[in-house]
Amino acid sequence: MIHLALFLGFTIACACVRAATGYVPSNMAPPPIAREFRGAWVAAVNNIDWPSKKTLTTPQQKNELLAIFDQCAALKLNVVVLQVRPACDALYASKLEPWSEYLTGTQGKAPNPYWDPLEFAVNEAHKRGLELHAWFNPFRARHSTGNKSFSAADHISKTRPELVKTYGTHLWLDPGLQEVHDYSARVILDVVQRYDIDGVHVDDYFYPYREKDARKIEIPFPDDASWAAYQKSGGKLSRDDWRRDNVNRFIARMYRGVKAAKPWVKVGISPFGIYRPGHPAQIKGFDQYQSIYADPRAWLANGWLDYIVPQLYWRIDPPAQSFPVLLKWWTENNPKHRQIVAGLNTTAIGTQAVYTVSDAGNKGWPASEIERQIQLTRQQSGIAGHIHWNMGALMRNKGRVAMLLAEDEYKHPALAPAAHASTRALSKPVVMMADTKNGWRLQWSAASDEEARFWIVQTKRDGAWRTEVLPGNVFARGMVSTPEAAAVTAVDRFGNNSQPQVIARARK
Image 1 (cartoon, rainbow, N blue to C red):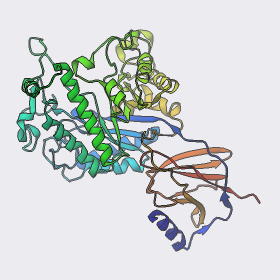
Image 2 (image 1 turned 45 degrees about the vertical axis):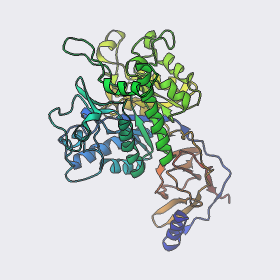
Image 3 (image 1 turned 60 degrees about the vertical axis):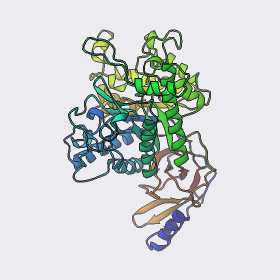
Image 4 (image 1 turned 90 degrees about the vertical axis):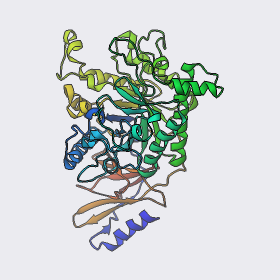
């Protein structure tokens, strides 16, 4: 009852406010808000998106992050996928792993002045009606762009070197070791438990993409010891199947752990966009099942995630990696009806606004390619939305893509789809219009002890409805002019919404 008490106390205590008797409850139905996953990846590794440099000051880092969130809100996106663990490091305050060098320039060095970027990001995202999904790399221990001559004293390569393997230009945790599973699961659950995030997200890096040595010969992944231990324990799987099982077991454990800790936190995975060559028949390309031991069809079949984002980084027309053909394949291999979200290669857009057929291949895609792909996701049954790779393309408005989307595809706001888990039905909010010395004010509160993550606030003027998504800790909205009607809908942490409470001007 806390929010209702605060709301009523505010109304009674403020002498300058009086209830607007001209508004009464109404059966009028505002238009339902669209449900579409509209996201963007914000990559920290190699300073791709944020922070843009290792040398930024704390105020500069904050300002860059705020600019990203402001752009997301302006475009009417609703999910930010923020990379917080690029390589067994942390872009947040952690007692388990060192501060990331991509944040402060030196692994293990805390930001100065001190701040916690993830806590800041969660709060600022929610203020703008955005979900914040924390993005982890579960097995990468050092990226090729990291400082190879220095690791912090509390980095896993120093504290548990037996878990870490050198693979080409990277350091990698061995997924065949139970201690590795325990360690990475503990890191992820630490964030879930301590931060008010909306989702956990992992990408396509399980076993590493294969590297070659100076002679151009493929380097085998150095897991002979863990493979031998598995065989000695009586394991019967082939080596390839054992590796896939290692990945599958971790994903299943991660999913169960997150749901046990906070069942409303969504779990998402973004695998390579082609399951296997020949699936469907015309598709050619990289084989993630055989090369990085990822089996996303098994994850979907077992329901070990809430949403999956195949990285469909190809154009619509070429048949060997056709965007719509692959899009349809993923929907046909989803027996548990998890959310399928298309990963879009927005960064492939060139810098020009218009391209001819002859120069498009040399200078990048036209922005219209991404617009057409978004349209296809809306036409294909079973698709929940899309995520842009990457935020930098939207910040730079490459090929005028941000402008194009704002004018057309993102003209109206949308809420991210609710997680597949459901909770009890939400009550309608309590809503009133107040007349203050500064003008009309729409005020609302939860009807009981329920807590809203967001509010959908809709006002009707001149016969047209306007929709906003506001954070759950906001309980009032000033009105420039008196609306014909107003509606407020509560949205909980799962993404489920109440029925709207509508008030309208009383007829005289």
